[in-house]
Image 1 (cartoon, protein in one colour):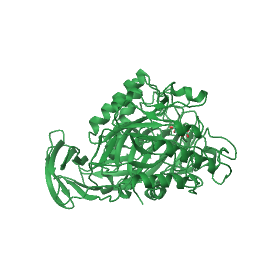
Image 2 (tube, rainbow, N blue to C red):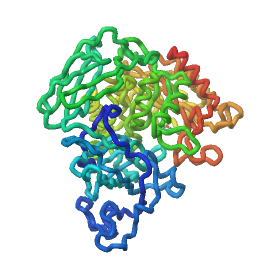
Image 3 (cartoon, rainbow, N blue to C red):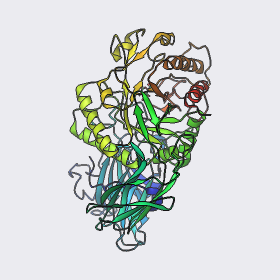
Image 4 (cartoon, helix red, strand yellow):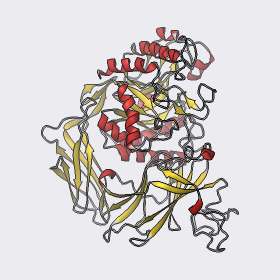
Length: 605
Ligand code: GCB
């Protein structure tokens, strides 16, 4: 559960920040005694048992007899996970304590300071100078903790301690089983953000979807001086101003500046946008475009667009792969997506690094952004739903100025039962409130017309397929994952399969493909060969090309990724091998098959 968090601060690149990345000390806490002590006497809310709590003064009651020592404990680089930095932590799931020192910056009186965490997987409890400040749940979303009153005086040293726990829980989002690696730690940037006493906490500057001659600006000021006139500038020219109310909130519409060029994948134009209040100014690079649908067509700036692309995990290329940690790793990954002729990326299955989403803006890649509501979520649990909404808020608030982002996805492969519908409808409604300008989707199951989804695992699939999950009614765009030719159905069966749906909506086939070990060659009917994988794609594209309401494709997946239950020796070795490139970036045969489809369909070169 989240506690004592500050509302999220956005427009980070233009703010004054102190980098808190680098080497942090770490203490493994397998039995979770760091807060409670070995007798478990503390409820975790009070100052703790100072003899034992890793967060508090070492050996305060029994000097010299402390049984832990941050100063001599292993270092872990932040951003980063513990699993790939120390062999002995590879499969560790549980609590790990982190500590870093920093000096209080010498800032003007009245300024406020916040620690911004890009992501901590999965739970974080934050302490500063022996005081427990806040708690966050959710492994992929950003969060902020105000530290203004907890800091040492200017120039003096502070101890920032975070207890991270990546234990998988049945009521969590995601829950206990996923097909990806559970990297634990402070996996994204940590910074100390310094702002004026009243500051621009967030602002959204976007085209109005049903009237693109207008720009709408919405502003949230934070602080005592909340009611102000806030100027909005595009390329240094004021386009209008927003009057904020006593809560610091305001919104207004202005005519778009003359000659504004709309953002497209072919020409991803970004403008310098500034939000200037009497007390603060933030700037960012923002693109302007609309995204809408008409029947089964997706329209970008009113023009039909086919979302030809690829799905990817937030995992960097390399022999010892880990989560994407910086802009360079994001650009390397997305470079392969561009080489594949993509105009679209499905950023699966959770909130990706902000560096990745910003890179999509620059590279002209339309993006599907997703929540880790994956497989068997605890649908009836109200606190799970509350956490889902919090994670959705973090995702949308962080990324709703990115022109690249066109779709929010609320779930992946969930069975169509009533308690699921209630849960997901609540998330959909929440997404529409936070961002009425983008499309909502989910990756659903389809089924053969004569059976349910699970029936396909029992035998040969010959009948046609239908997309009739009741959630389709609530979505703007249908997403469907299917593995014909791999998990079920022969490759040949695809030649006679037709797809139908009662919904008059665009369809993106959000997953399809098969596994191949790079370098393994053979006949097209030999499992795990590159040749078989390429053959599956050939048949898939022949079938998909016949779907009249198809509006996009994101094959599974760009790169082989770590997955603990993919064990087949000499073939998988702990990786899901459905990548078009292996984890070191080497292409498989299927890469060119997908590239040809993407170029044909998107008109990219
Ligand atoms: C799926 C899941 C994805 C898996 C993939 C697979 O349907 O959505 O997370 O990795 O299948 O490879 O089985």
